Image (cartoon, rainbow, N blue to C red; front, side, top):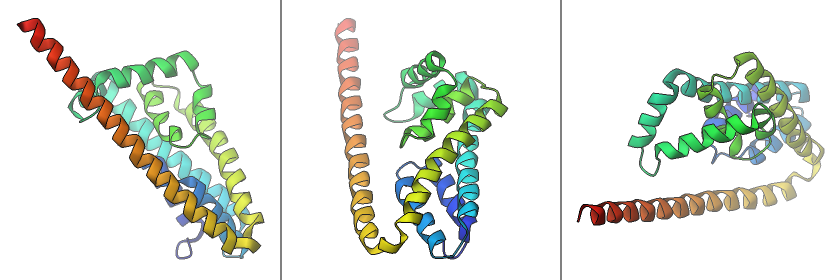
Length: 200
């Protein structure tokens, strides 16, 4: 952010949308702190981070829209630890709860990335998707950027807690992935055994 300014903050937020382990809970307060030091203006940070959020979301939306349902399900069948039923469940959840999930999902860690894919699969109107994504992102970004901006004078204390929080987030992500992988492997083994027993 020191090198690229507000556009750099927007770029990091776009990456966070594509790679959820990069926590916006760290990126956005840091951008607010930089603004409090005069390295960039507050409005520039809010504009660019919202653009970054929208850009990342549109990329994932495009993946779902361009591949379509059949190709996405076929791709899911080839990805380890993923199966077509997972995509179908996400698609069904989006169909039941509708557009509000796009708006509210922007304020939920990790979920903000996932929700863009079923929106693309369902070909949600791009204008509505962009508007709801931008509004939800603006609210989320504003809260965290302002937190960093207002606590700028106590940055040494904030840095301590942010560093610890980011480590906790990373540990939780790894544990979640391991638990998910273990359950999926066990489920696949159970299905294979059931199929073999039917053959016998």
